[in-house]
Structures are given as structure tokens and as C-alpha cells.
Amino acid sequence: MSDVFPEGALCVESLDIEAQGIAHRADGKVVFIEGALPFEVVHTSVHRKKNNWEAGVVTAIHRESSQRVRPGCENFGLHAGACGGCKMQHLHSSAQVAIKQRVLEDNLWHLAKVKAQTLLRPIEGPTWGYRYRARLSVRYVVKKGKVLIGFHERKSRYIADMRTCEVLPPQVSVLLVPLRELIFSMDARETCPQIELACGDDITALVLRHMEALSEADLKRLRDFAQLHAVQWWTQSKGPDTVRLLDEGGPVLCYRLPEFGITMPYKPTDFTQVNPHINRVLVSRALRLLKAKRQDRVIDWFCGLGNFTLPLATQAGEVLGIEGSDTMVRRAQENWTLNQSQRSDPLAPTLFLARNLFEMTPEQLMADGVADKWLVDPPREGAFALAKALADLHADPARRGAWTPPQRIVYVSCNPATLARDAGLLVHKAGYSCVAAGVVNMFPHTAHVESIAVFEWTGLDGEDVGFDVLTASLPPE
Image (cartoon, rainbow, N blue to C red; front, side, top):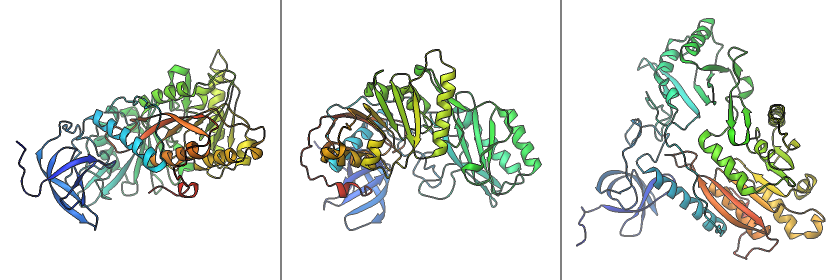
């Protein structure tokens, strides 16, 4: 006997990457439902209608999913004022990972007609207290007579009234209320819009963005807070170049990669992975998949401060790290020199160069020399220029002459759509096969999908599936 549900109830079929349930009305119209999970039967309050779809919020659940869990943070929810930092807390963490894996597979297939030969086991770790990097908005609300510090409310420019945050490390979560009290006590409480958080292995650093010069009284308040709560204050008056340690001579912010004996100093505004627990596993997994040997020359594209480059230098024979900024290249070289000086076993010779990696040409690719392996870790925009240069050289053997493509590429991605676009070029136009792919749950409870894919050189032309290079160069929808 089938279940009987109230008139107008919808059966949720799947979940999109924004953590909205997807259902269809009897006439086939798609309905996106915030707060609904697959296989639930729900009633929905629709707040947006288009010709082919509607969007709404769940108002009643008549059949609940077995994967629904109680959110772990008091700030999560669909109500007005709820924090917009997490979207999936109502879904079991293992189901979150499964959905992200499906997103990766769907992007590879639907955008690029690529299927990985092997699906890698997802990289998972702690689901709470993992966020060691964050930008917290700050606002003095005159009408309420208080300061708010935290993430923005769902679909709003207002700041959620947060007193704790379960995805921040516990030692930071407990600082939210004291920080509110600190900013409220300051002369500059109306002109401090942001606090950036960076937790190193030994230090919790806070960067205060201030729009006007801080008074001596405010500087003293910051120093007193730092001493009481064992944090390190930095100040930022304008852009990233104005970030300064409040009191010089303090300990250096760093994270470590113990498996490789690598220490990575950084500034609190530098790009580093949000989740250090997952990053350590990701670096190890990437290097195992790359299979670099002592006779190999390896290029690390988008090398940053050397997160992959320095561990690679413990395994390869020669490493080239390439980044788009002269400043970042200098900092990466300094990190290599520091680690070299601290080791009994020397690192491989490593050179860092600055390139505009979004304007790479086949000629520039050949000028950087032959490499046996590549590690590619681009920003959200992906590595289209690199993949296109490889495709162009594959299509014109005479042009590449004695230059040979890398035999293996490990591609670490923070955007499954641009990964799929670049995979399409590599597989269908550049002579590679996708031998493995999988997800990395870097941001539990959020819709963010981090992933890793492995490509091997075959030299064979890919199957003609109508993959258009010109279409692939456009930003994915």
C-alpha cells in the first residue's frame, strides 16, 4: 500500500550543489527547495517563479530522509538571521561527500564527455573545528548598541548574530564574544569592517582591517587582548601590502607537512588551504599519484608558497615552481632556502619563476623545458591556457620538435566545472587519458567541491565527441 500525502506535496528526487532539493511538479516543472533532502516528501513555500522552474523553502516534511541529521551549529537554519556560511549541516557528512563525488562525475561527463577509469576514495577528515582560515565581517550596529562579528546571513548583506561557530577551531569560536566586546570598546569601532583569521600550527593570528588610523588607546586594547587570549594581532589599513604585525619580533606563523619534514612560513593574508588536516593528506595523495622519482624533472604550476613544490623537492630530481607573482615567487624561494638549511638530506634543485599562467603559449611552454611530470593547482578559473597549449602542440608534432609532453599530470582543482573543461582538452585534444579522479572534502557542510584528477599521456587522439575548443574556452555556466 502506497503512502498517501497531502495535496500539493512534492517528492524530492535529488540535491543540487547549492544543497537545494530538486523536485518536479505533475506538469514537469522543476522546483528547487531549500532545506529539503532526496527522497523526502515536503510542502514548499515558493518565493520565485520562472517559466521552467520555481524556487522555494521547505515548510513541512511529511516523509523524512534517513540521511537528515540535527545541525551541529545553533546558527544554521532557514530562518531569518541564520548564518549563510554552511548549507549542508542538515545532511549526514558521508552523504555530503557522496553528493560532491556525483557533482564531480557529472561535471566531467556532461561538460567534457570524460569518465575517469578509477574513482579515488574521497579524502575526508574532521567535520567540525576545521576552518583555520576565515574572513569575519565586523559591524557596529548603532540601533542595537552592539558589535556583530561573523559570517553573513543567508542571502543577505547583514551579519549573523553569532556567539559561537562550530566550524571554526574551538579556541577561535570562544573568542567571538570577547572580540565583539573588544571592538565595541574601541574608538575605531565604526571603521573596522573585517577581521581575518589565520591559525598556524603554533599561533592564532588575527588581522584587523581598519579604515582610519588607530589611536594609541586602541593599540593598547589590542595588545592587552593579545596577551590575555594568546593571539597575534596584525593590522591592515588598505590593501594586502599594508598588512603589518602589530609588534615586531613575535613568533612566525607557519604550518608543517610532517611526512616530508617541511615547514611553511606564511603571512595571515597569504593564500593557504583552509583545512590543514585535509591539506596534509591531499599533498601526500597528490605526490603518491604523481609518482615522481629521483631522475624526474617536475613542474609545479600555480605553485604559490610551495605547498606542493617543497614536498616534491624531497622526491624528484629537479623541480620548477611557476606562479604569476614576482613577490610570491620570491617568498617560495625563501621557503625552499629555509627548509634546505634545516635538513640533513638536501632538497632537489628547485627554481621558481614568474609567469602569467592565463596567457601561456605553446612557445612559452616549450621554453620552460621538458618535464616528466606536472602538478597543476590553479585557482577557480582553472588552467585552460596550459591545457590549450598542450592541445596545440599535440595537433602539430612538427611545431614541438624534440619537446615532449609530461607523461603524467596530477590536477588539483577547487572548481569541478573548470576542471571538466580542462579535462576535455587534455583527453580529446592533447593525447591524455583520465586514469583517476576523486573529491577532497576540504569544506565540510558547504557546497564547495575540491577534487583531484590524474592524466596519463597516451599520444592518441581522443574520441570525437564534439568537444569544441572554442566553447571550452568560455567560462562555464
